Image (cartoon, rainbow, N blue to C red; front, side, top):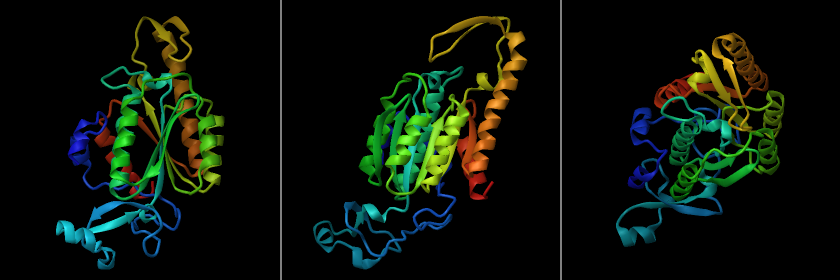
Length: 299
């Protein structure tokens, strides 16, 4: 799609590097099994979405012969229920996601990740939606599999700036109550909220039958605490600041962060939620390729 070059968060070089990567639900979701990528529905369903060009393996009986008569090309009608999976990508746009010690903030890195996943999901005919939130839902686009819908998702990502404070559990509970069809939910966030509340919301979504992936985004400075001497630390969500000697804070800070990350790792494992920590210093194509490799092998 030539139009994709205009989108800030869709990196064509990154897509080329990832090749034909597919992200599939690990559990059975609406009749799907990992590794199988054919629609479980018999025939073509009720809601017309768009035409797509005939591909080897498509049933000839679904060719639109009227379109062939006008264009001398084979096209097939694609319907919404022909999609393989219903996917929601949730991106945390809170103030803490605006932090970045390098080239990219956590929100920018997460937006590249969301755009890349949306591209692959839509191009493998999976209906994909987008939820942007901070303390509450700021924007929601329902899952669709049309290429024109992908452009809407990418445009929505481009328009986002870090917002207010974080309240992850609220939007997740709202989504759990509103989802009508089970599918795949991908949460992209630094998870700077009460882990017990967030894990409770993930449990709610899991109870509704969704397959969940949690991508926790962290800046290398948050992981390694490279600060030295007297430093001013500012909370991006409250604006509160403190001046302290970095050397004195390093050990208790790193211990607290390890406990924080560990709580999410263990909590997600207990819920059978797929969890992965992304360091924004790692090129996204490397981080995502490693993750998909691990996921495809069930660990």
